[in-house]
Structure formats: C-alpha cells, structure tokens
Length: 221
Image 1 (cartoon, rainbow, N blue to C red):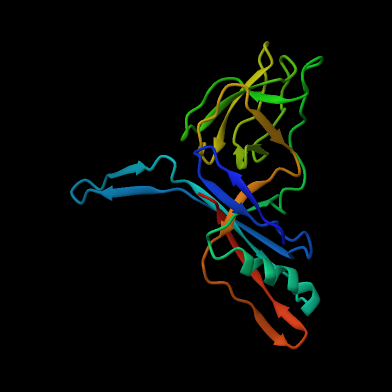
Image 2: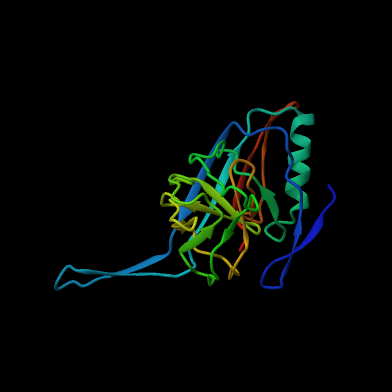
C-alpha cells in the first residue's frame, strides 16, 4: 500500500500506512489505562496516590471472523508493512458508530467548532466555541472529538453559554499543545493515530483456506 509521511506537532515524523477498509472485524475490544502509583502506609492503612500526568493511554484489539486467503491477504500485508511498532495508521474506531449529542452550530458562523483558548499538553479540559448560544447537549459523555490526529473522549455535556462557548473534560489528556482557534472534528468518521502494540505479529491458519487473525493496536505516542 502507498505510504505517506506525517509531521507531528512536536516536529517528529511518522510513516503512515493506510489501514485496510475490508474485511471488517467481528469484535472490537477497546482498552484504556491510567498510570497511578500508590503507597500504603502500614501503620495507618492510608494510601497515598499519585497520577502521572500525560501517561494515560488507550488502544484496541480487532478480532476478525474466519478469513479466506484472499480476505486475509490485505491484513497480512498491512501487518508486515507496519514494520512492527515503527509506523502509524489512522483509524476510525469501529465501535464509534454515531454521535450521542445533538450539535447546535452557531447560525451565521463558520460551521466549525474551534478551541476557545490555548491549552498545554497534558490538559484534561478544554473550552470550545462555535455553538449556538445557550444550547445544551451539543456533545455528551462518551462522544469523541479529533484534534489533529489525536482522538479524545468527551466526559461532560458540552452545554454552551451565552457566547456560544462550552467547556468540558476530556480523556486522555492533550498530547500536544493546542493553539487558540484550532479546529475540532466530531461525529462518526473521526480518526486517531495508532500503531501496533507489539513488534511481533502472528495469525493462525487452521486449513489451507481458513485464517484466524487479531490485531492489537495502541495509541501512537
């Protein structure tokens, strides 16, 4: 498959390999993880916890139905072309099928939702603009937004104030600093940057024309 080079906000570059659009997985197993250290004091039983800022991450496992040789070929070629964890791929999470909220875009506006401020890497909440004034439920918890090539899950309802601005918490934390007026995409079709979770890739061939295959993906960091 033809590859392309994408430059990340920090100036580093990643080779992108297009993810095969077919076949579709039969099972999607997302996983999320936060890095929290704890110490329990033996004399009091109290536990001290410390979360590592920016260490939250996520990924998914895609499991496919039994595939013929022809059906498995694009996936097996893609697994090899990814060169282990070295390369990246843009994927729309297969389990995110529709937006939960009801977006109300500001009449007479640009038709885009933008960041209403500058936010540093590691931030866990953002402010947005471009909504209809005093509109509620523009985005709801578990909706997904895309900023650049990064995906974030909305944790609070995006209810707009009188100026058409809405602030809400997100997960994971911002991967890169975001400038004022950055475009925010939302709804089905949003994509995130992922890589293989391991260098080793394998599949099972039970008969000459029957391949069992799963792909483990992690957020590209």
